[in-house]
Image: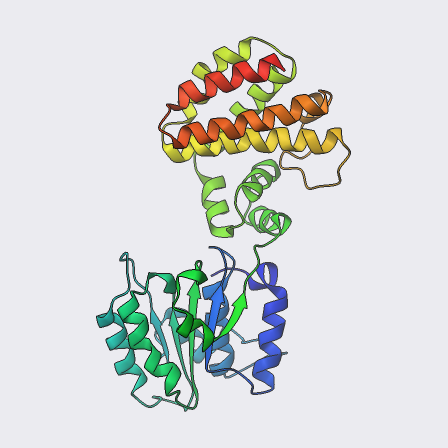
Length: 324
């Protein structure tokens, strides 16, 4: 699970106070992009409620109750998670069957539905009975990355908690703590705010090669060296075997030019490529040239989404970058 102290320290403190005051609501919607700690906070709430050894407002994580919550085996913490494309009425029927039971070991029960945007309309309507006839001691938490896809009747009956993406630096710190090299951590942390996705990205065998290829291309375009065109074939294509890799390489190029533009105008902003010498070289180009480069990278990204081949899109991009 995500490190909530890094991703959502304010929400963690907020729910610590809510539980201490005994003011936990009966229905919540945790809304926000992937990787921001929605399910982790739901799990933390369950731990905090059942922990036998709460320390300074935090569940200990070691007692039998915490361990059962963490392993998904606590009888009074019920998860509805589905790898299917949708969550159907039958899934909610099974959940409601659990809701009709009394707590196995206490009067408190927690129900957590992840990716609630996958609920069909019928499933949401079936779930409405809980909201219309809440049971004391029972809390339901829906997590979603698309709140607007939920029925207004569901949203209006729950307390909506909006999760903000973690700052890039928080993700970078998390990656470095996992042993990832600083530059790779920085680039991955700027490509996605999802800590787990960033770590998987940075640990992929091809990631370091992709970063190296992009830095080499940036160096050639900064020097207006025609060899940059050849590098599409020799450096980029071997590291762009999948559509995801292709998008990632273009996103890295955009980060490089974005860093250079910020440095050119002396904007105090986090740098994806840190103190890489090539960014300093790029920043010596004029502001309009750097802005046109970013626009050209965006155009290449759009072409890629229109089924233009990666090689064709990037070759045209490099020619534009060399024109200045």
